[in-house]
Structures are given as C-alpha cells and as structure tokens.
Image (cartoon, rainbow, N blue to C red; front, side, top):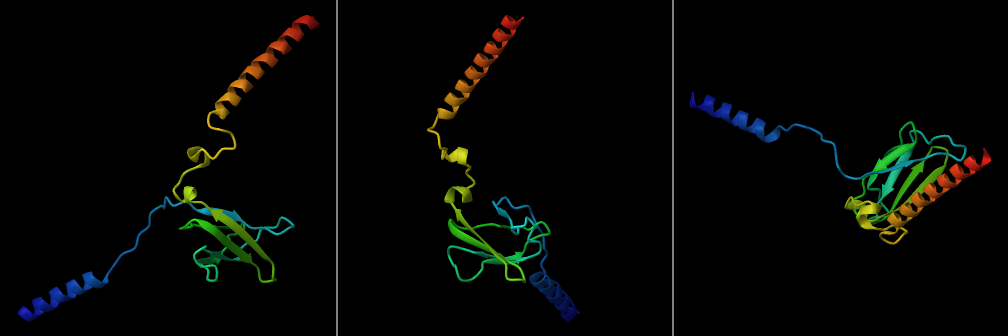
Length: 149
C-alpha cells in the first residue's frame, strides 16, 4: 500500500514538474511598423522580411513575412541603426535603414523631449500671433462688408 501511495505521489509530483501552460498578454513595447511596396504602388504582400540589429549586422534577429498589405513590424531592443530587408522570389529587394533612439525606446515622444525645431515656449507665441491675425482679418472682412453696402 505504501508503495502505491509513493508511486501516486511521485507521479503527481513529476506531472507538476514537467507540465506547463501557455498564455499571452498585450505588450506595451513600442514597435516599428513598416509598409513595403513596389514602384508601381503594388503592395509587397507575403514577402520574406528580415531584421538586422546594430548588435549583429550579419545575422537576422527576426525573420518573417509581410502581411497581405505589405506591412511588417518589429520591436527594437537597443538604440542604433537597424535594417529591415524585404525580398520577393523575383529578385526585388527593399531595404529600410532606421535609426532608433534611446528616447524612442524609453517611450518619450518628441514633445516630451523638447526636440522641436522651435525654441521652448515659441509654439505658444506662434499660437497667440495666429489668434491675433485671425481676429484682425475677421475685423477687416467685416469692415469691408459694411462699406460695400
């Protein structure tokens, strides 16, 4: 009887050790979505795609196929110059060379990093000047319409 209990316990324990499940979750990582097409505008549908990292420019870190719309996406894990190559069976090839910044990886946008072409605070000044201009032009239009009658 003891042997039977021992065998059952070992069987249950062994099942726990070797069994595992699967699952998924929506990732919050930032992907780089790309669209590939021919010069005629036709989409490069279901074509071979390979991604090369700045860490290793010889071996692809990801491979797959574009979708029906010629789209392909990847998630970079480091900053630097990345390359995505899409090829078809007829010898056509499109190469996308992309520079991924640390700000992108950290999830900061252009407005958050103040990398605007205008100095900080200038966007508010431009909006104010635009508003004054709109009011001034409306006043001119109303003034001319009164003098026309």
